[in-house]
Image (cartoon, rainbow, N blue to C red):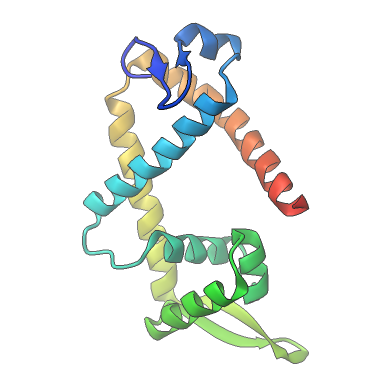
Length: 171
């Protein structure tokens, strides 16, 4: 939805402001917007922090670990919907870069718990700060009425995220 005109999804119908206000946005259009927003954020993040050598997957793993300190690799794989060997490979690389530490998982010494190092926490904080700055700068370019709608949609989007996570958890 650029300016005051309609948004046209790459493979779907036109979405007007009226459709947004009425709550009748078709799901393919919403899915398209979410995918394009993620790609735009990734591109902008690379531009905002060109010295960052971490991949989006690594940053998402670090962010997930920040939300779930002490998580086991298998739990991170479950939360991120990644193959356990992919998480193991990423953790190995992040340990090499001193962003993550492994400790025994309490009473069962066969298990492993992961923690962010100070450098890992700083990487997550920098990633989140860049994302916040990107959004702030972009929102400054958006019409105030759209900013109002975006702000009003945050609780609904948070609920949508919860519903999507529940679907992912249930398989």
